[in-house]
Length: 276
Image 1 (cartoon, rainbow, N blue to C red):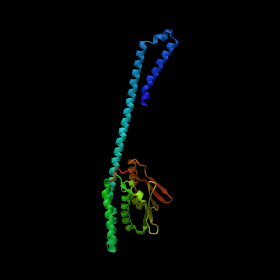
Image 2: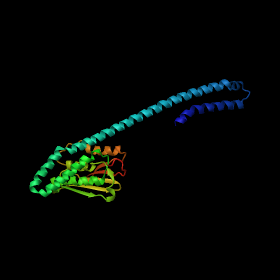
Image 3: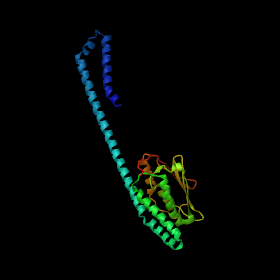
Image 4: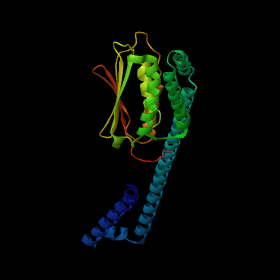
């Protein structure tokens, strides 16, 4: 493109030169044509070409400089967005680590279990330890395997199940070949927590959560049975997941409501970059 812009004045003047030369061949005795085709003619056109090339180079330099500056700005903005998302993610993890509400409810459940069912209380403590260990270890990771996420969500679900009993059910259908696929850590926890936060859980009408993997995608579904009291939400969890996939240059998750179901579909990644 730029070479065409640079060559354009040269081609125009060469064309004009050939036109004049043609006139000289056709009208060799024409005094005006003969006089215009001399050394002054060459000097004039060389100067004209030089001036036009200079202005074209100046134009191209300004255009290229503007383009480089815009790309530099864009790169800096993307880097800033990445840093913001990373720190926001770490902040959300930190909040999860010390979430007073979650910890308070867990300790209350544990307190009642100690006297009612010591064996179950012991299992509950083990699950709590697994959950908080994963939360602490995953803070520095960009990606983790689906296998580790499912192991974590199993412990997390047992904590919830102990609290909500028959009001909650979780069903996982993931083949072994998909368990080594990758996704951002705590993705499943955010989606399960989101489902529990916004829906009713009753023994006669349990909240059903399903996790399925197929064709390179992971679908997380939950039945829609919203609470009568509106729960405040800033959608940080869902937007945080979407931002992570965008910054990984991957297809963004899809979110939809269909046939009384809330469905989030995530691409499963295969690259090993960032996994520890």
